[in-house]
Image 1 (spheres, rainbow, N blue to C red):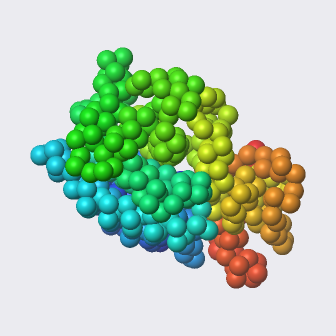
Image 2: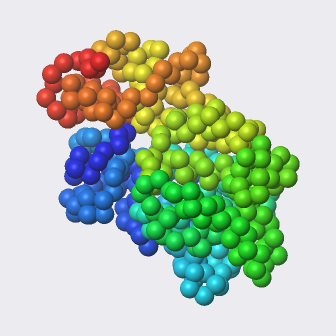
Length: 397
């Protein structure tokens, strides 16, 4: 799996991410082979980058299954987009629509407990709030399920995720989508959205109004009191709010925004687990990362055994996935790649993740995309599809 700019994409490459357009509708669904028309439109839409499963179009590698069905995600984004539009136009919330949406998400997550969270989707600027809300709802539902909450409580958490950012309707798009740094005054405006969300949700004619309002107003609070808007801390932050807070930050960090790139899951793991002391409920955060592919399938990494590509990620062992090792320690291609479960190795078995430039360098020098090693039949033949003329068999240092 590799992240490419639109001008690097070629017909036949398979997408590893979905892309939602400015109305919240799917423009491109993960697992779709690219065509010339798709690539042209990606350039027109100024999509900065896209993960594909392989550089080779000779074999079409499917992305791994996600925690929910793609059609469920698409339907949920559409429902949230329409609900937000109606709320902005006339202040009316179609709670029945959102409750049906929440029910679908809960059922999907509970039915797919064995699937780990892989790559997040890509959203064009105007659709970010809609699909971000759905992703937060999915991640929060997953974490709530891991915490052992009942289905009825999971539906509340899911609704809280769907509506946690509703207060952003009170913030202008100019500020929300600003490509550069916010001024102090603009940041003050952004920080009003939890309180605005609380006001909106408290007016709902629903028995859940009070709880949803609490989630909205608390999702940026930190356990040490350093969050906003009210510097609430410790046990004063509701457990549902702690769950939504984790989901919100994870999805924001792994997403492309006008002012930032998308960080890789392993980088986000370090940021949230080690660089944010006092921000999160650590027990819930550890549980969360047990169900997130910190190294998604297709990630190419340097290990203590040699260079390898991630074949499978197992719940509870997300820091040490199952990989196919395809070079020796010096970067020389092996005649016979082999599989190994890194959880049976030393905890420092993963040395670093190969970045996209280094991966392209490797492919250019060997003529082989490591993604080919995920195909069992091709791996057995040793007749790997070539992507460029072979020049040398070592990774450029």
